[in-house]
Amino acid sequence: MATNNNYKDFETLDPKDWKESKALMHQMVEDAFNYIENVRERKIWQEMPEAVLSSFSTPLPEHPSDAKTVYKALQETVLPYPMGNIHPRFWAWYMGNGTISGVMGDFWASILNPNLGGGNHAAHKVEEQVISWIKDIVKFPQSAGGLMVSGGSMANYTALAVARNAKAGYDVRKEGLKENNLVFYASTEIHSCNTKAIELLGLGTKGLKKIKVNHDYTINVEALKQQIQDDKNNGLRPICIIGSSGTVNTGAIDDLTTVANICEQENLWFHVDGAIGAIAMLSPKIKPLLKGIERADSVALDLHKWLHMPFEAGCVLIKDSVQHKSTFSLIPEYLEKNTRGIASGTDWFSEYGLQLSRRFRALKVWMSLKEHGSERFGRMITRNIEQAHYLGNCIANNNDLELLAPIGMDIVCFRYNPGGLTQEQLNTLNKEIKLQIEERAIALPGYTTLNGNYCIRCAISSHRVNTNDFDDFVSNVLDIGNEVLQNSD
Ligand SMILES: *Cc1c(COP(=O)(O)O)cnc(C)c1O
Image 1 (cartoon, rainbow, N blue to C red):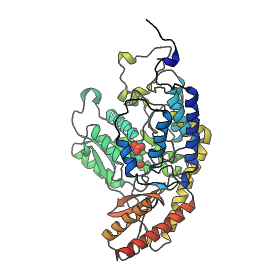
Image 2: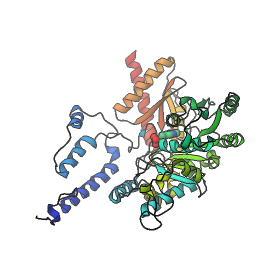
Image 3: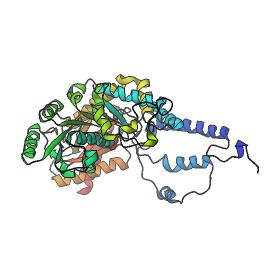
Image 4: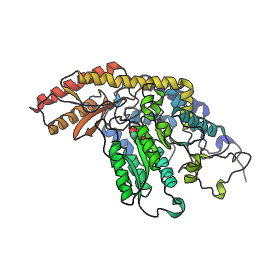
C-alpha cells in the first residue's frame, strides 16, 4: 500500500498555498483598518437591496471555492450593510464601538484557539488577570469569584443562579425547588434579561416583584420595603434585591447604599445589574454615584458596552467564591484534574458557569487595557457624560424640543414637540422623525416609551463621537420634524 507522506497532497483545512493565503490575509488587514479609519465616510446604515438579500439564500456549498472568491462575497454582501455601531453617530440601544487592540485580541484568540474551560496554559492566566482587574475596578476583594461571559444577560443569569442557591435554605441542586415561594425584587425599570433569568431558574415571572420608581426612575425604597414586609406576611420568601447601576431606558442609578442596607437587615442577596454603569467606576464623575456597589454580593458587567470591547464580552463577579463554585461545579471522571501537566490547576472556569468550552474572550480586554490604561477608558466615559449634557442643553434651549427624563449618565430621552399636539400625534410624529433620521443615514438614535410618551433616546457610548455630531443631529431633527408636520397638514 502506498503511504503518502507528501504533506502537499494530504488533505487538511489549511491553505494549499501558504504564500498566497498570507497575501490575502495582508490585504484583509489593510482593508479592515481602512474600514475602521474611514467609518465616517460610509453610510452609517442602509437597507440591503434584493440582489444582496437573495445571495443569503443560496444552498449549502458542497465543493471548495477560492478563498479570494469568498472574501469578495464578504466585501460585496456584508461589509456595505453594517449594523452601524462602530460609527460615531450610533446611539441606539446600548453598544460600544470596539477597539483596534480588541480586534487584534479577538484575532489572536482565534489563532491560539484555546478552550477556557480550564487547564494549565497562559490563556487561563490572562482571564484570571482580567477578572482580577475588574474586581479592583468595582472595589471587590480579590477573594471574590469571577467569570468572563458572553455579556450582561449571561452575567446576570449566572449571579442570580448563585443568589437562588445561596438563599434557598436547602440544596436546590439536589432537591430542585421544593416550594415555589422564593422572590427577587427590582424596579420596574429592570432589564428584561433578569426576568428571563428568573423564569429559567424555575421561579416564574411571579418570582420577580417589580417595584415602582421615583420621578428620576430610581427604585422607590419605601415601596420596596413595604413589598418585602407584605410578602413575608403572606408566606413568601424574599431572597434577593437587584439594584441597577444604570437602567436601560434612562441610565438611572438606584440608591445602592440604601438597597445594601435593606439587604443586610433582611438577610437578602444584593445583586447589581451593572451592564451599563458598573464600568463607569472608571470615571471620577460617576464613581461617587455608584457608592454601595462594593457592598453587593454580586455584580454583572458588560465590557462590550462602555468598555468598547468587540462583542461578546461580559463579566460576573460573586463576592463569595465558594458559593459561586458550589452552584456550578460538577466534575465527571473525564474532567478530573491532575496535579501536573495540562490538566492541573485548581480553579477551572467551567466550575463557575454553565459553559464547558469557552472562547478566549479575555484576550481583547487584556490587550486593550494594557494598551490604553484604565484612566483613558475613564476619560472616554466622562466625555460621553459631558456630551449627554451638551445634547441635553441643546434640547432644553430649544422651544420645539422637550427632554422626557432626567439625563442618567449618558442617556438622553427627548422628543420634538412644537406644541399643540396630542400625545398620540406626538408619538406618531417622533417615530417618523426617528425613522427618517435612520433612512437618511444621518445618525442611529434609539427609542423607548416613558409614561406613554415615545422618546428618541440617545445612549452616547461612543469613543468616536464629537459635539459637532450632536449639533448636526439636532438641526436635522428640527428640520425633519418641521417637514413632517407641514406635509401632514
Ligand atoms: C444590555 C443590558 C443587559 C443585557 O446585556 P447583554 O450584553 O445584551 O446580554 C442587561 N442589563 C442592562 C441594564 C443592559 O443595559
